Length: 318
Image 1 (cartoon, rainbow, N blue to C red):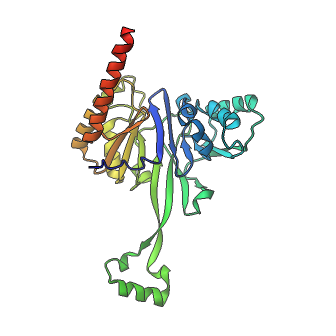
Image 2: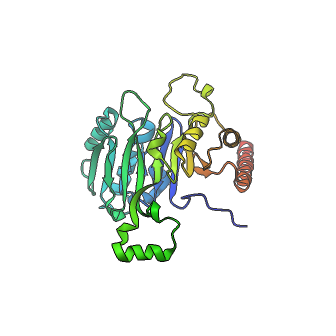
């Protein structure tokens, strides 16, 4: 039996570990969300496909990869003339510092680079998406010292008006012939992808019924935030937020290095039983998208662990 493909599995690549590095590349939209260390090393020449970068905030683990990414696009074996736009939260001192460094060290780029400051509730046209798909920003809660943003990719869809739902097709056709298509259908917004960056739980209204929400989950329980920074989220509150927002798929990322993969899967399964978020839940563990409830995924994970242990034993014997 063929294992069902994970949602967007063919479109998403990424890496995330709390404190170290976070980035997610959505190939369909040619968009990179955040640019943590190692993004260019992981994507290789795929960096030439990136047309826009959306930064959630200015912490090093989300922007340090910009330096090598721009260098590879300038010197690597790809389309060195493809323009690149980098959107970032306005008035961000840390991002201004890396912009200044890049301006000083890479001042003769082969491609057009545009830095665009943005605020919450801004709409950004995605020119290559035929005007029916656009980006909208929303404010997140992370650091009190700087603006942090989340992003929704929104598609304009046509929907049958409520008064025509359930009517026979011949009656709907008659209304169209008499009054036109706009009589029976209207444009509605559908969030097809959401990225929250680092944050406390997102306001459910900002990601209501998102098809695919990427939400950080640094801790498995509130007790694990020993320093009580209250800048990150823990498992149950993320699941509860996703349930209230009625999201369809949830990808957890930015997990703490303290948790093994087996611990993550076990705790997520327990959390699903407690909260019942009524959506599919996945986790980005390092560079792998894992389904914690999939038997097939668990078998592959155990096989990889055995192979890793065998390799480590062999190396110790050399």
